[in-house]
Length: 130
Image (cartoon, rainbow, N blue to C red; front, side, top):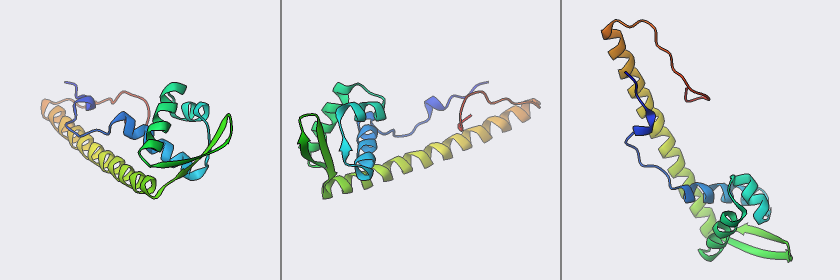
């Protein structure tokens, strides 16, 4: 009997929302950011990083100041601060729901195995979730 956490009935955060949250956190700490740095930090292509930054500027989440041809400084706007707060709350809410559901399913799985008479259980995986 195996249980997969992939099938948890939880609302997930959109990938773009996660990218935006990471950019907002980085810009808050340091305004010096270029497309290549953003791509490296996010683990995405330079093109996707550029598109995400441009979209965030268009939506009014970031203000950009061009220092010279290859470097722009980004600053959080009041809307950007509000969006960062919303995304952080959403991420924490998702994380707590995921943890609660995983713990509940793990406990149920262990009860089912104990009822069957199984005495040894092994959780396989890498990282904290295993």
